[in-house]
Length: 312
Length: 320
Image (tube, rainbow over all chains, first blue to last red; front, side, top):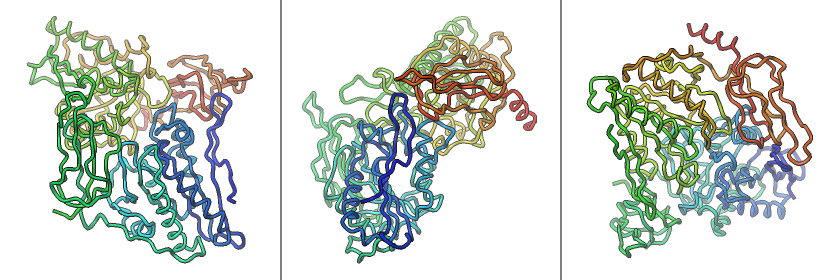
């Protein structure tokens, strides 16, 4: 089994320590050549990564002879949040993934961020697993800033995901874990899949295969590469955003991950009070509905879906 | 005074969100103008109190014919959060002050920010009343981030003791101050108080400093006392005292105290056994500008920030 350690502890006020735990797997013999860090729970309401960590740990326990590198599993970075359905860092109510690279000379969230960066510094790869949030359901995808496209897209294509989304760089995202790690030389992929506060078993197994495949390609595991799906590449098309035109209750009419025609009715926004259908959400382009709203209450502007389709 | 809705947003079940503005000197189109933005977070009660106090003060001054510029006050941006003890936008927990300049076709809080920003554009000056992001309370200070369009000189007319003048963090590119500066408003923040509470002395100091600013910048025709000479402080030069242990924190000083090297500033005791875990001693002479404001403290939290007179002078000399 992996070597389980508390790798970051910070005293809490009343008889408890904040802690980040790591499970480390190393080769049974010979020196480790590469290191990968598998990370989940930067947001405390995203649990899909916990299941992937379990599956990976289970696989490694069953195949210790295949390990050729160092595999670090961090299931719960925001451990206070994970155990209390809290997305942000409790007490401070701050999004940990907008606090990187952090600092030893700042408040608790920044100290956690600084600690996390130092723990993973020197890893060749990091896989940061997110589950969207409680509002949106996502197909397994990797999101990559355009500036890192050349380095990261080939790696993402190994991960058995459905979609690689290369987006324009946004300055505010410089405060994320992934940006910080990529800046210091750790090739870091951000996976988004499923929905917050829930577990999708199929997506977990899908990503496990991707992780094993990536590690096989990089020589971290001595196994044959797996047959994985080749993801849709965002560069060949465009993403259309479906935002609610009015407040109400969003009732989807199309299942997640369906191919839809331009003009299809994706869902209704209805009034629970009057019994009226207030608005029809219409697909502006044809394509795959890769994001769908999971939490039905919407305000004007709330994202209810995203379609990836051909450029118009 | 003109009271009007800047933003209204329907909710599925609640009464609509209204962001109200109070405009003074509407007819003074030629004079300088300022917009003052109050509580953007649901815990910025002090900021709400100062802004609403300004509305009442300016209403009286307008009746006396003293308004010579155009002054817009927006006491509460995030009334939904204020009304339910939340800090951020109650549905998706996003921070409204991380959504600027906004996006009219985007998510709800991006749309709110966009509509608000449309109103805020074009003012000569922009004052943002802010609380701290951490559990601290502080002397009122000016936070001026360097966007390339900032105006340090005008902040001195507030007469506050400290101006924190520093490069911007990446997250601040989504905040109001940065974007307002990019749209050529001389924008800055006044950071003060303790989140979730009202400190009357501090509120009074901020109120007075804004009145002084309005007078000196020729928007309010009244005589005012001079304020303090502002010290321009690079935050890296402020001494940070950290808690090496967690527990119950007892402070022995108040913000603004002039403390000596070796002076005991506070202590941390074990929350269960009552044992004294740490005595916090100042390593230098200076002024306590901020201190931790919650009775329970985490290990490594910053307990005190001390501005050293010598270092402040040093920075002033370098700038001159």
